[in-house]
Length: 235
Image 1 (tube, rainbow, N blue to C red):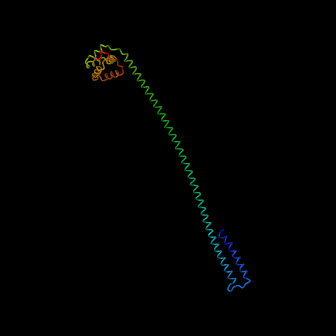
Image 2: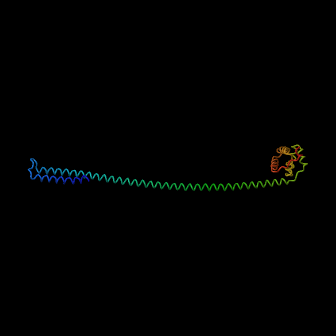
Image 3: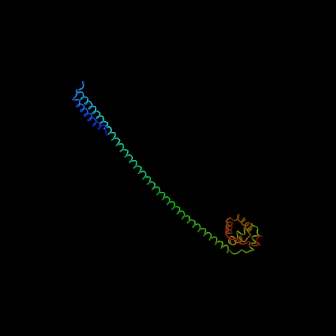
């Protein structure tokens, strides 16, 4: 119960008690020095004090209402701020989720590009390996053809071989140079039929005379499968 309501109950009860007391004193002689007017003045003074207290209570109640209204406004502001913060948090989470989705999609695209690039490189590598293999096969075919051609070269007379082996390396190189001008294959066959050491000394002397010729003969000798050395060719 509020103080104001309590006062509204107490004041009438007090007034009623005062009236009853005065009524009880009507049959008696009033005490000396006590007058009805003074009692009424006291009652009025008390009523005035009660009115002042009521006014004070009313002011206090107004202040309380003001404070209550202020508190309500603050609570509403806090609730609004909390809702705004929650909304901002939700938006931030949504933005992060969207960004994560974009990053994941970009990562998948990058992985796909890398895989496609690796496949393209692998295809290009296989193509290059096939091309190199084909070139090697063509080169081997040429070498085999050259070897076959060298095998089919007219065999050099053994007497001619022995003659060149017996000659001075310088003179033999001059003779070989002239022979290669007329029949290069016979010159190669001659060198192939000679003993390896003697053929090497002859080529050493041929280098100063004709570097290209010595290189060509050396190349052809490298391609040609050397025949087994004859017993009489080792001297």
